[in-house]
Image (cartoon, rainbow, N blue to C red):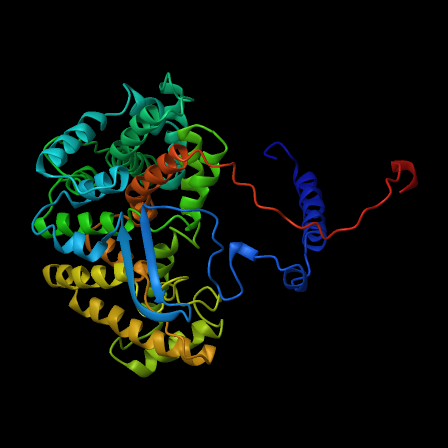
Length: 454
């Protein structure tokens, strides 16, 4: 296209517009057919519940009790342990993410010796292949850090002599390497982007063995490499809360689907990253931040419930922000009373706001959360509760941690690689069938017409 003349480009775009019209028309399926053929669109039942497609022992997401599906405060379990108890049991430890990753992979909480050994293993595996930073990350740096992660994961295939070996031992080694290396790849990718696209000085710090994953992330992305104890603690909790969320979320299901085909680890994780990048999944906290930025421009008095309600109602009426009708960060497929991750993160957001002097902004988030709950319920004309999900507060927390917005979704990936790895191993251990859902053909059968008679 770069070699086209202006007239050729105009003609090409005209043809392309016609193709788009044809695609829109020919690809449209009558929505009534989904009901007629009892198709579980999006693998969901009519009441929104996910269709059971597999079994797992890795995590449990609970939002209701009993056959009557009575809403309850949300509960999240990793290998049988409730997440809120995992977080509260850490005390001053900054190695909660490592402990959680061990639990997800091996099914039990590590004792001190097991955790120390595991931390050392991750430290040993954290280094990227020789010249990888120069030859892969620094060349053609992307503006999107999720694409950086995907490119690097695919490139690591070429550095692995046993890339296609899907034995449990080899996949475990590959998984541990990726868990250890994701923070380094994301940080170096951001530094390359910052240098080449923002014309900033190139700052590359090496990770330290005696620091946790959370501490190393803060060291790697900050020019001075400094952080407070509370900052490291809050980031560690963020990683724990994002590490896993059942087998049915989009990226984890993607991991199961690709693993069931017998493909390699790098292809599987690259696909999971592509899923997580989507704004309906891991990219949702970006939308929350963008929505609040728009709110701050349009609402003069943050303490006025009338002004805030008017703005939020305009969003629901598709007259504000991105005209989608969605208040981002509100609502969840399983949780209705509360998202346990959001409850935990909200408490840490309050602590961090006190350290950072951003109490007024925290109060704004809390106020919007309360108003949004009521407005969404009233607009839907239903008694079903709606709650803030983890994305509602995570972007605010990342902002207070001075994590660049370009790294918001990669932070999710840095955590979720632990869950993906656990599910990939579970799928391989159980030797499941290839996942192949059926699609009902609702088109017509037609006679072929030679081109000269069309």
